Image 1 (spheres, rainbow, N blue to C red):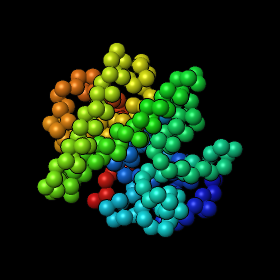
Image 2: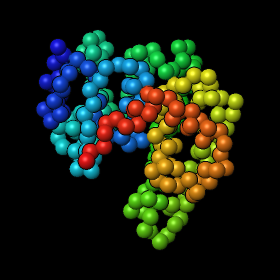
Image 3: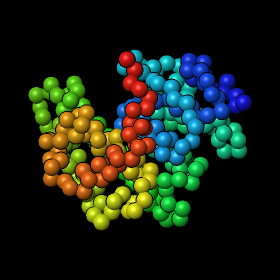
Image 4: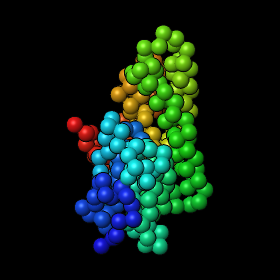
Length: 235
């Protein structure tokens, strides 16, 4: 039986199955990256729903796991050397799980690094920029009379979609014939841009062909469908 008592978060969200991976998340575009990954690779895990609307990421127990106060975060009771390992940042978790299982990334070093560069592309560009579009189009920013901030992020989103459109020329997946963590990193964000954020017309989604087709392929995967709904949203 794994001992997770060293992690204060387990006092707030006790582990029923401490020998399993412990996931602390909510189904946002960042959160679903890890739940999709875990569903794809089939490792047993226990999920703890974190209510970000109640600021649960800012309580001391959560901050002890992720000092940046964001989801997702994870504890692997069987980390390197058989010792528990805590991780935050969704991109880092994707890479760790791919390394741990040898799944969803190329086996050759060059392919592995190429895959990582697309994960970092999502982390550095797709996520932050699409998120700003969401803020200025759907949330509080929509009430700003000055639309220049919104348009700045909309135009950059179009450019980033163009990067993906070019990358997918002749490819089913970001890395070619194989679905990888590069695809997983982007699914939630691309889906939310036109879905939850309702910004399809703004970013001229209909002008793209390969990106929508890629998203549809992603969404036909059973593990993706399951992961998009894990954990259930807090009531």
